[in-house]
Length: 279
Image 1 (cartoon, rainbow, N blue to C red):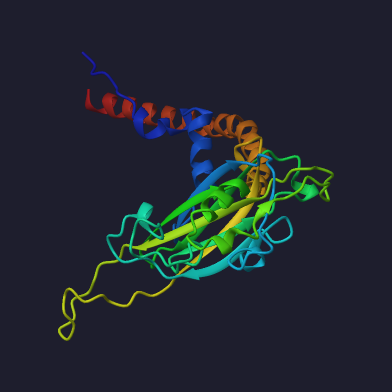
Image 2: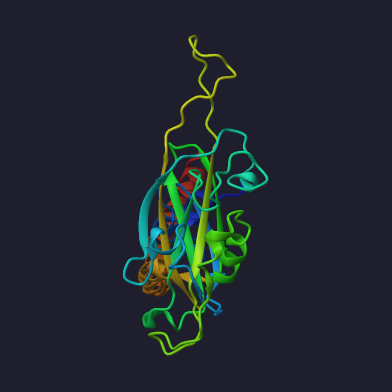
């Protein structure tokens, strides 16, 4: 009785895989990047509301940096709050770490987001992305405020003379022809999360100096409400690449399968010849 001949199909069956299994590694190759920074992202609607005139106040007005269509990113450094400080309590009136002025806390940054440019008027949703080096241990909190919310926060100021100059702007036609504004304000708070290094000459309870945390802010619209503008070139590159791979992969598999069948037949012939010699 002749023994059965088992073909080595496992080692030669790699070319029988489906097209999706070939495309997935290509997607991972182009999308995955080395993680060299931490990122916080917040998406928000560009809703319209009545503007508030802060130009006559001493604490607001033109002192805050602005991100807009022509300058949608910036780089800043902020001193983090002490280790183990809850983020929600940083620079709040209920805590002892806030100064007399609610908008001049050293552990936060306020940035005006000008969304009224004509090039951005067709986008109803935006995203604000904050990135900082992985070598700088810190936690960030991003919040978006409208002009009315800023006015309400400003009204908490104990010095009534500070808010005396702030008022609801009289309706007028802006450069976009609207009587309202889509202007928003971003509040960025940061707290230290580093591990303290024991020092022989320093008491464990004594506060240690913390370096300012550098970070980058990028403001951009969302296509279809989900796709950041900066990723559009990558998507435009991947789509034709994946379509081409889907069309070419079956042809490549079919071409290589011819050689696989030849290899299988050779293995079968060798096994058969070996069996005949043994008989």
